[in-house]
Length: 443
Image (tube, rainbow, N blue to C red; front, side, top):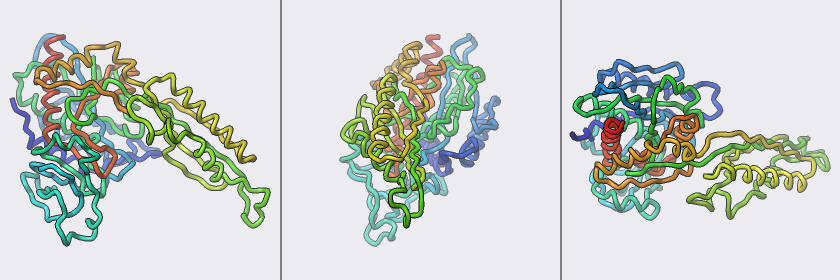
């Protein structure tokens, strides 16, 4: 049985061109209309495959079941991916470029040479060239470049088929790679009823990128023993831990008055914000200075004026107990800033976001063990890894459904330098086909 890679590529290219950028602060759910558009398309495609139990619900979530091919009762395995893409880089007007038989070296993004359509569905851009030619349009005079020096994994992808952006948007492989893999899994299982497996539940969620992926997920309705998110990088990785996460909102208040009469009376909240931020660690406990299992404080948005400023700050650590220490560091900086700029006030509101999924996975060791066994059956080495971030699986695991995260060929997510590899997408689909068989055999 061979995965239909051409069909898989077509799916991926189709999905990434639908703008599903999440909108933080939106009062609607999902936060952007494109998520409903993609969800509707996926539900239609699942029905066209022949699935009867398909639902696109009022919250934009897509539910489906691939029926078991064996009669004896067994565990229900669920697969999840999210429809939205990160608001950090626009996902509007995505123009994917396909680089077939990648020859190595840096990949220069942009309009470049005229597109060549090499086995790519109509309406999609395929570039057979990795570098723009002389005389390219103005938009490509200073193109972005995916550099081997920054992406050493490219050395292992020579001869493969890569999909990149045109340098103006993200690609959306996070998480439309996962969506495409799950859809291809369903199609493959339906085409090959001789493959033994139990009931397979499919769940596509919305607004994962802004922390609301499972707000409307009913675990009883899902009815799964175990779940796997398809939202990982590279190939062959099984993510067994995520950060534990809180978010702080610092509200800094000053005193506003016309600058012509401000002497001795104005207290500028913007200046207080600058003092507060300057007091946070710069050589440690920040994303720019940490890696591995180190946690951090990360101010990521600021808005306001003289009278009031709001700053959002991420608190992250693999050890949940350390989040309290990070919160104390924020409180200390706030106190010092108020002392340095009398008259200002800084209020901190800290809310819980998600917790390290590793804390819950220990309660169901089969979730990881069977994923490793599926790789072994494919004669591949599984790598147990950690995520310096979170997934829907973090919250699903905390709520009692063990949910490791699996590779889908994502590279440089949330960036116009994002790319994915078709062979890694195919390998991810092959892994899922083996995984459902492992669960069928052992349960």
